Image 1 (cartoon, one colour):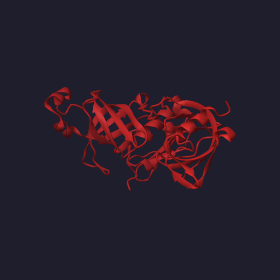
Image 2 (cartoon, helix red, strand yellow; image 1 turned 120 degrees about the horizontal axis):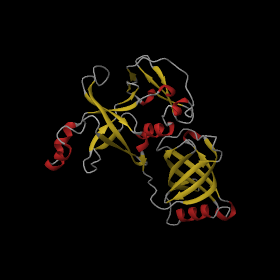
Image 3 (tube, one colour; image 1 turned 90 degrees about the horizontal axis):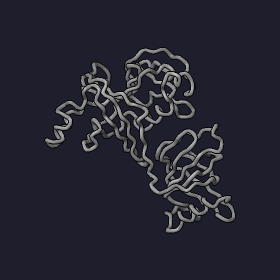
Image 4 (cartoon, one colour; image 1 turned 30 degrees about the vertical axis):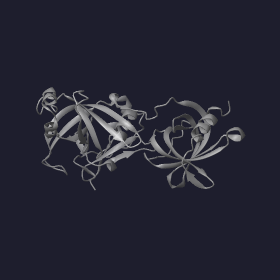
Length: 302
């Protein structure tokens, strides 16, 4: 419902992520990761001043782009590889291209009142109402389903009360994320077994992606990458159902599997395996099914 508010910028043409914006010091890959894992509207958690034992709830209500506010993820334009290409701001949807990006920030609510939930000693650690002092650090944590936990350190820029827009007259905190501090956990806890077996990936809606290979398998997840690094994977949302058709030849047999996307980059994605098709029906993995699959992948063309 909410699109973007405030801002008056011209409509310059989009640029390649590796173009001018990179020379200005913005890393497109890191910016994409931050936007993917910390989208507008998602409930997050945070801890102030690196005190991991003090955790509060919050959410990002807007991105700050060169001093303008973007209140909807729909106002973030992406190119064919999923990289942010421009931001739409203002009621007229004025366009700020990536090449013009000088400042990227998060707008979060002032949650100072949550300090009342703390005991005396933890309140004393951060000081009453002082967690959002200018220059303090707030570490945001995103618990995305099936993705693990991602964190990013942000520096408090200022406390503000908006005068217009959907959150007018609400106390907010403007924080600046340090893109180089983004950390994403890998849910695949067991060691990865490398392979290079071909796979046909059937995407939501019946589309096919190929040619692809399985680069590694760990526990019940696989990493699929494109053979040609210049050909990006099509867009796939986290949690999207996919089908993997793996033909390992006479020695390894054929495996038709169902999975869900954990995360996607331009040239690879991680897929959680949920079951296998047998006689046209989906069934859960048996005790030896995943071991047989892993053995077949490891020994493919060896």
